[in-house]
Image 1 (cartoon, rainbow, N blue to C red):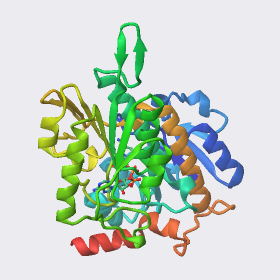
Image 2: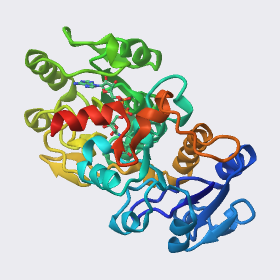
Image 3: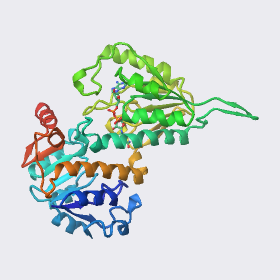
Image 4: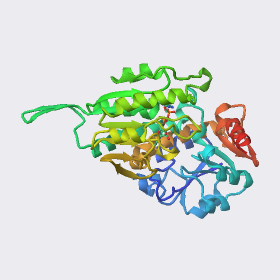
Length: 378
Ligand code: NAD
């Protein structure tokens, strides 16, 4: 099998496989790997770093034509879709539950497409879980970004010029990104509080030295694989009130609440932002799925009533060197499962990881979750 690593779209600075991951894959499997010219440039991995590791550094047209399996983080555009052959394989981050037009195109073109953001969050699949590795990057960078915008110090200072109190940080949603945000804010010396609807998050939050904010009566479902579920209207009202009370006392609010496959819950109300202190900062990591804050603007940083609201959160692209390292490692582990030792595609749909990450094959849906989602919504 020939694997082709495509160059990303201009706004994406990561590369889907770095030389070390390619080298590990080639050692394990009978595959050849081609890389598109300059694919790693934006991640500080020039072509010379791939030289002697990949089997060739080629143009885009050649790469698409010669490869059996293409890897790219950014979603395919019309040009790529137009060039791909039926049954050619695509591995990427396709966000299929939010991109019906793309899913339809993949089905119509009979592309065998795998979306790594659909890999189930199970212990076995941890090493392939791009959502977790990228959320780690985002949680870390969100706090640094907040610190850069905040007109106060994060740590406490006792100096001859007086004592500076530590910054107060509220983290909404204590999943992967939220926990990393808590850890980073604590390392910078802030006082941290965190809120989540899952009671299991309490212990994790406290183990990082933060205070857990509890709102009684959250719905939980043990069948939801550790994920949150939709809450009642009565709970949402209580939650908004409690969040209001804590947010107005905070210098920084990091929003990272999400329910997979749904628009982000709107937790931080306009009235709350209006009551926050001037100079406060909100980083809305959920901006791309609608935002946890009512005022967030996707891909934009705005100032509302002297509160900075950061919706431009493409942090994985600004920590592109290590983000590429982590992403490439996840891809390598995924291809290790998807390709047998002889270099053939191992389409074992009995395997939950392969089935649930497969968007389309032979013009049919494969993932049960995607199939049910589109069958119910059409
Ligand atoms: P996750 O699923 O691990 O965590 C989300 C958390 O939100 C869970 O703990 C869940 O219980 C909690 N939650 C759900 N509904 C809630 C509610 N109503 N109130 C409080 N908590 C609630 O998700 P993650 O991987 O940590 O990602 C978090 C967010 O960060 C997502 O919106 C994701 O898209 C975004 N993200 C952004 C970037 C970036 O570069 N900008 C990268 C990765 C992730």
